[in-house]
Amino acid sequence: MTLTDWLNNCQDYFANHDYRSATRASALSFWRGVVDRACRPLPNYGMNVFERDWDVLIILDACRPDQLEIVADEYDFLPANVPTIYSVGSSSKPWMQSTFVPEYRQDVAETAYISGNGFTKDFLPTDVLAGQTATTAGNIPLVADDFAHFEAVAYQDGAHDDTLGTIPPREITARAVEYWRNHRDANRLLLHYMQPHAPYPSLGGVERLASDEVGTYAQRWTVWDRLFVGELSRDAALSAYRDCLRWVLDDIAVLLENIDAEDVVLSADHAELFGEYGMYSHPNVPIPDLRRVPWVEVTATDTETLVPECPPVAIRQLTSGAVSDEQVHSRLADLGYR
Image 1 (cartoon, rainbow, N blue to C red):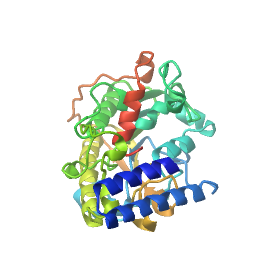
Image 2 (image 1 turned 180 degrees about the vertical axis):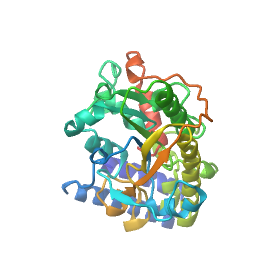
Image 3 (image 1 turned 30 degrees about the horizontal axis):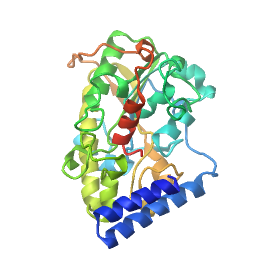
Image 4 (image 1 turned 120 degrees about the vertical axis):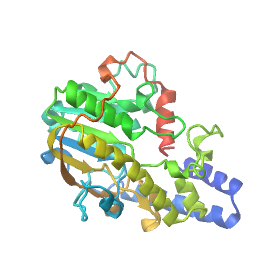
């Protein structure tokens, strides 16, 4: 966050809230920026997922192990005590930058990657990025063609729910089942679901989503903005987070009954902060609470209860310029990246 970003946020806080709430929100926003800059020189740490053995790796974006444990008794495939590892990133893009690196090129070449995360635009080859600005290209060591199979679901027609402002879990599940059952040409499958990352559907009346054309994204009040100014309690936010977590776990249950895989792992790219250290969401700082993510090992058996209706779409099939700047910025804005 730049000083200009912070000043714009402050202007929005004071324009929409009382002096005390706006001051609190501005101070928290400033503190986040200070911590972010102070931590940038620190060395990276964490375990690259390619260091472990797995057939299918399921990434639940922004999944906290403690919240996974709270809902564990609702799902047969979750243990009461969730094992954890430390991730190589505190947010999605740094996780990608530290995961998909030349050291693991051979592993990546044997992996199919189906992702709903908007930052997959940084894997796109230059012909797809034709006409885009420099700020929307590259920055990840490996590209789409380095994978056995690659699908940037966030930019496929019909996958993004503009009302909810996210990629529903079923979009990932359907593509994963269709690919693994009928078109498998990789030894490994890596799936990136967007839940329990905000926006939270149960906060639809509180959080402004993609359908609200109210000006710049800085003027759209997210769950974090509501927490900043004290309009939403931490308990209420965590409850909405768990509802979002259940949304994706319900689909994971479907997935595990519709693919064959001996070694399946549920993990996350990073966790989420709800006021720890005076911070919220997942700023790119190496805080252990952000880096500690689940590592749950399960198995899957295809009972063919799901018949997905979605032809697999590899990124190579996209035409030049198919991913526009507007799409990129819209997808990332929905997720809270300003």
